[in-house]
Image (cartoon, rainbow, N blue to C red; front, side, top):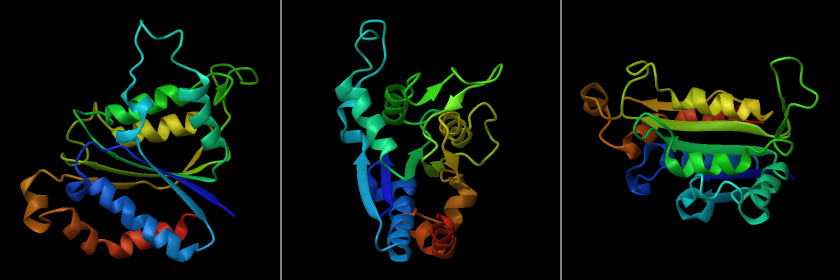
Length: 202
C-alpha cells in the first residue's frame, strides 16, 4: 500500500486559499484513482516545529529527535509528498521554511560523503513530489522570487522526484479577477486539469 503525506502551509484561511483548495481537489481525484492508498495530512500552521525559527539562541538544540528526526522518518516512510504553498512576501510561508529547516539535515536527508566534486547526494529518493502553489502576481513579474522553483530545487537536492507543479498565478490582478472571483471558481474551471495531474501522479 502506497503512503501519501500532504503538507498544507498557507497562512491564508482555508475558505479563500487557492493552494489549499486546489490541493484538496487534487487529493480527492487521487483517492478516486487510488482507493488503496493511505493518506496523512499535516497542516503546518498547527505544528510546533513550524513556529520554531532557527536562531543563534537555539541552533545547538534545533535538530532533535522530537522536532527533526520524527518528521524526517515520516518522509522516509512515505512514497508520495504533496505540498500546498502560497507566496508570502516573495517567499514560501514561514511555516514551510521552518519545516524545511528541520528536515534538511546532513547525513540524514542529504550527504556529501559519496558526492562528486561540487555535488551532493539526496537521501530521500523514495519520494515523488507534487507542488501546488499560488501567488498574487503573474509568473515573471518578480524574477527574483519564484517559490515553486525554490521548492523544486530543495526537494530535488534531497533526492526526491518532483513532478510537474500546479501553479496558480496572478490571483490578485484585474485580468485574473475578471474571470475568476475566488478559489472555488478557479477549481470549478480547472477540474479537468487537476484530474489529469492526479491521474499522472503514480
